[in-house]
Image (cartoon, rainbow, N blue to C red):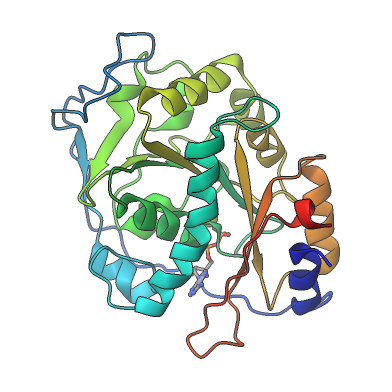
Length: 299
Ligand SMILES: Nc1ncnc2c1ncn2[C@@H]1O[C@H](COP(=O)(O)OP(=O)(O)O)[C@@H](O)[C@H]1O
Ligand SMILES: [Mg+2]
């Protein structure tokens, strides 16, 4: 039995389930729009050294993340951190040992998605990003690619600002102007940006493919995490899946419908490299339960 099937059996069949509330805490922090000197796409790239400059700064409210239950660098929740160690290891192995998937996409580009909203994509994206940034010699760029319903900035406790969609709509010539270095070492962040009526077309554009390709090659030690829209309700997610080397499907144990998860996997096409995280499990004492594996490979 594949790990996906095992998880599906564990997830509650066709249930309504857990509708965890989203936070409504007011935005407290401001992003300083300083001039970034991360090299622009198509300029000469020094792939060996870390940026020696101050990018725009994004001051994440780490206390707030800790309260929500998300991993922070100083967090003492060792069990949760250990679970993320298990989750990130195969992702990092694929990213830096295999480098590209069978379609030639860079494995250091990891898409986090789910069948439906509220299953924990943003929670997982941020936890994974911070966990990987904590590794020696690894840096992470977290992109809020859930352009339909962006929530990373809000979760970070920073103001919404310009980002990916503004770049793709041609408002900025240089992506470097939109990247910000966070107060977590080795973690930078690209916001989703303005709402746009043609987001699927923008994400499907040649410019987006070039951007992801360029960002994935810019630093050899960098992982790019795409916090993405849900597969069942949007067309954007399927488009993004075509750009990512690896896809992680977050399944909320108590609310995901088996039929939705199966349809979501079908929407990812015939790829055999889908990782699975069973989230919001109530079977463990601290509510976190993760199953991770390349299910389709183990059929
Ligand atoms: N493992 C978890 N433990 C505790 N809370 C979680 C967990 N996963 C998600 N949540 C909470 O559930 C809600 C929905 O999660 P979110 O990541 O925003 O979902 P999505 O991005 O898939 O729409 C948020 O309030 C989030 O903090
Ligand atoms: Mg989200």
